[in-house]
Image (tube, rainbow, N blue to C red; front, side, top):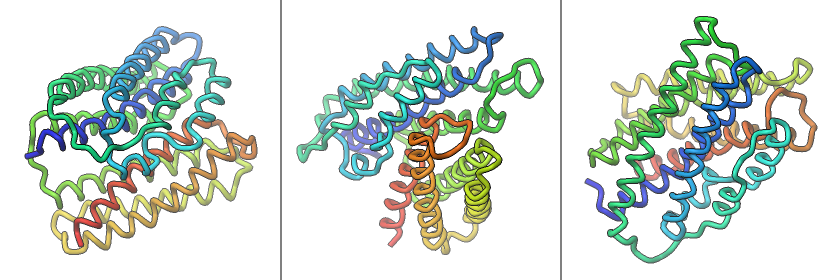
Length: 308
């Protein structure tokens, strides 16, 4: 069972990562609707603002309470996040709260113990995050059903809608585990995380491949190779229920592949910001998938150190 201090820190770190991710999901959804679906776009705008408000509240609680590993991971914000937001707002006309990004860039850690009296505030925050995420997941689910039945059109891939729906549900699962003080089995958690994130990384590579201009053949091939690499890693992770002895080796393979894909994503985001890559992709989507890779890398680094 987690101590109060662990509960507070784990909750803050989980929320800071996923609240920004889900806020940006709403942005990507809103920006991809045509004139006939402005009611859906407005719903996405409301959801984006809800997660912005939750993120702002979390930031007020979190400064000085985060682990150095999270602060240095690049999963909350990167050096490209602010520029990516500004460029994406310019392209889409949809506003983003850049002050939140500036605040996150200045977050610090503290050597002092966490205050256990924050438990009630954090518990309330987590419950409101569960409610907001449930609403967003329901919105994504209904949207996906309508897209697949040809009742709605969006410039987002159906797989992307399914992808971000799975991320919302994964966040809900982790929040619920925290709220219920459930004990996590280390090896089972490692396997579940690797199955989930390897699939996510594969799909990132395929999304990048599909959003590149057809003339970007070298980048297309690189993205395709990373997609196949992570498909393989996902298949291997799915066998780990019976072959856990080779888990450290698989985690190491996932680390190496994720570093390579993360660096490819960083170079791609820089290329979009500098107008050196031809694609139908806003820079914020590039930075978004960089942060998800950084998050996965921190998890893998923690796992490999605990498995030694």
